[in-house]
Length: 352
Image (tube, rainbow, N blue to C red; front, side, top):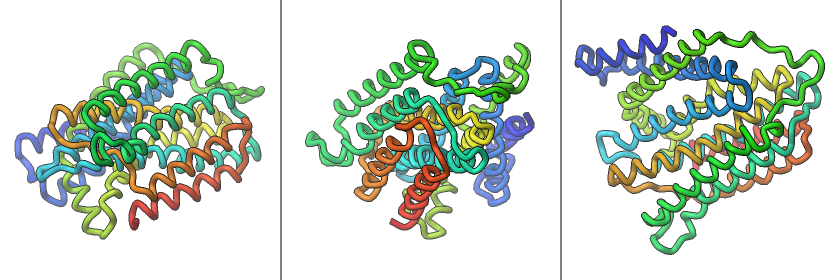
């Protein structure tokens, strides 16, 4: 609760030019408060999630993370210089790799070490993964092979079409997850594992919703102030420009990743997969359309197609993930496989 209030104070100081927004002390403090506010946003989303139950709770978490992600990306695009036209692609790709390899791999490893073997609803997990695969291919791979304009771009008509079908596919997935086949996304409970925390009251839920909105607004404002510093910092340490996307994705996904790992440790792997795949689907199915609309309004080009080495990593991720989720049971081996792919991604993002 203190983090969003501290963020409001910092934003007020910056807006009224009481402090130098380019000074190292201000940027350092703003960075710490930004991370704390992201944690707060997800904490308040979890309160709402606990009240409304699964799988709706995972949707709230994914929605909160998507708002933060879009805010950070648009802030980078609006950087004082010419803006970064690749930050949307790099961030969305980094989010997909972080979620499907980093978070999922850590969840499988943690759950495997503690419970040896874990089970989940393969129907729901595979359905979610197939949606991620289609969305990622349409937005991150196909732009390299279209002929209307030279890749890695879509033409205006193509980008508008992909925006619409992405939203349709995301909406269809939500309908299946929450209404049509909701049972496919619920945890497989065994005696003694179903007990959870107390359900928040209406007052606690309302307070959580209010502070969630405040936290999201604060993150957006702080992100705008910190965007130029993040780009300069990545360049100063000698990393490739694409590593900016990794930084953004890591900030956004850190608290939600911890939520997924905690669920896996409690033998609720289905919840972990719901949170993880839900974030990946929202990142591509919602973030890309939102950023596409922003690019239309701002008149900025939107680079989408991945570099060839990243296409290989994405294809390897989708292939390995399909095999991991097909059986409905996992061990530490699958976790290590995904973490190895994630380590390769981080290496190539920093030094292609």
